[in-house]
Length: 339
Image (tube, rainbow, N blue to C red; front, side, top):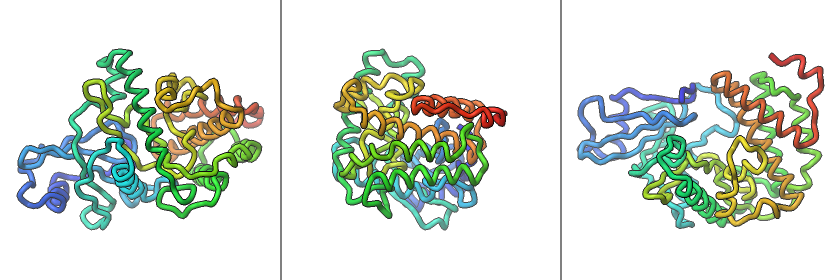
């Protein structure tokens, strides 16, 4: 995917990064040693072949001069911390980090090399029709079980993984969604709703958040495209930069409970250990708030990414659907300003 947040580097810089991470003896010759992975939206990533033939993966954060959402500032540092935490505290497979560089002297951003996983991207393979339906369902159940294991890590506060934290989930989640609304106001994005409409929905239903009293590790972005599959089994999960301390019901694999556009959540939920039909009213309310947060992010970030028009239109339609679930009807005065 094309995005202004991607930070590609010329071969000479990539060679300097390889030398720092692996030593001069493993710096490859020529200029065809790096293949960019194109399906991500935020960081640039390369498969790099070292001089001895081994493959590794390089991820580079956005350039210093590109404006990102508040939640995305220094986000690669969150990813590194999350990967280390997962490797130390769970059996969930994540790539090994070979070298992380936060000095920003070779390039104007954080970067790290990690283990290359010789497997297919689960989501891409499923989309391409290379996996049978029963294999897809089983792998989604496995993803749900892995995600639940991640949620077993208990934190000391609510909110972003590195902190600063909040004493309550209501406070942390309110800050998270408010940061995104302020980002939207800053770039003048048209949500089709006023920003105060979104704030009003949160205020009306915030009591449901008070049921969450223990901060749990929430991966937040574990979609099928952020996992690798080999021989029908999940062998790695990827892209941990959005992890927070919060409520496990916020996990991405459950988003389809609220919006069918995100697919049938049943296999994931089964592996995750919940029955959708048995969720309490308060749990359903929390889940809707988390989906509202997601679609607000999706809409607001189009103002930062300069995304294609269809991304904005789709995100807006999802936001309309969520607001309708909260019993809201867009005022005619707002509708008349769209387009």
